[in-house]
Amino acid sequence: MTKRALITGITGQDGTYLAEHLLAAGYEVFGMIRGQAPPATRGKKRPNPEVRLVSGDLLDQPSLIASIEQVQPIEVYNLGALSYVPISWQQAATTAEITGMGVLRVLEALRIVSGVTDSQAPGPGQPRFYQASSSEMFGKTRETPQNELTPFHPRSPYGVAKTFGHYTVQNYRESYGMFAVSGILFNHESPVRGAEFVTRKVSLGVAAIKLGLRDTLQLGNLDAERDWGFAGDYVRGMALMLARDEPEDFVLGTGVTHSVKELVASAFAHVGLDWREHVVVDPSLLRPAEVDQLCADPAKAGEKLGWKPAVSFEELVAMMVDSDLRLLWDSRHDLGTKAPEVASLW
Ligand code: NAP
Ligand code: G4F
Image (cartoon, rainbow, N blue to C red; front, side):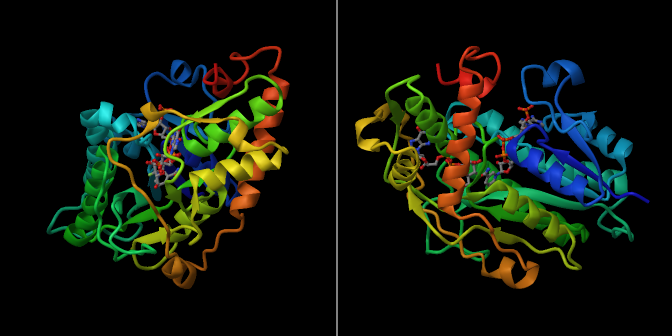
């Protein structure tokens, strides 16, 4: 029988790459979208047409139970979240509900549909669960690099919500014996990254400046350091975590750290420009509490999953800038309507 996977967050960056990866591996892929199917996808990039859409919301417990009953998946990937860190201060309660409590709701839906209780262990063929945990949980880091045993000290409502989700997964594994794992993923990016995140903001900004569509790029903290990798590499790791005999959590990252300043310098240099002539620091973009530096120790994933990222930082920056040069060039007569990302620039 064809293997069925259910993905929450199918319209996001990782949902896009994971669906592609699982379809290529022969899975039947179902993606959960909010609201009524046609209006919910209007104005957004529609998921791969081979993905079958089901209606559901991480805020709505009955919709999650119904989706799992309908799809009967062997794997569930919970990628849905309010994932933009700055918004989490403005909408802390919504973030807690979606990004934190949403994890509990999916696990409860799986537990109920599978008939698992504290006295009824999961039977063979019970669906496996992947949670999108985040390096943002390390926050004010206690050690460098960070691995699966590094203590958490989240610095944003988003990080706090992810930490709740992370421990909830661990608790369902220990309480009910469910196959539930978390991937603690460091920042991963791509040409379909949301335009509000710094890598994509920079690649779109550089492309627009190179094409003469604008002259400056406003940014916040240039000294923050991140471990940036390519999203396509990271979704491979998610699938590998669910393919193991034992449920365990894994860190995925490159082990190489760069500052925002280095990101900016590399992106401008790729098109032959000097960033100092175009970048303006806007203090309103600074965060109430910053995560100063993140750097992964992905040794466990290398050893037990055989996982290793294939795309370097320099290749990633070049890929994103080139893609946005093409995007802006193709939509130059039609700014704002052809691509939602372009509209966000003006
Ligand atoms: P993304 O592009 O922001 O996508 C987030 C997805 O969540 C969207 O499909 C969105 O759907 C969905 N969503 C939001 N609220 C929802 C709700 N109430 N019910 C159901 N779905 C909802 O995020 P991403 O970069 O692909 O990241 C995927 C996951 O990994 C997220 O959980 C993120 O927090 C986590 N993560 C990401 C990174 C990274 O660097 N990318 C690193 C660590 C962890 P709509 O289209 O309907 O808004
Ligand atoms: O791209 P960012 O917004 O990503 P951030 O906050 O690290 O979060 C991302 O990665 C997490 C994994 O660690 C995910 F869990 C989360 O969902 C998300 O995908 O910001 C990166 C850094 C920050 O230090 C920020 O202060 O870039 C700095 N920055 C400087 N100027 C900026 C800007 N960030 C944004 N978004 N916009 C700026 O203008």
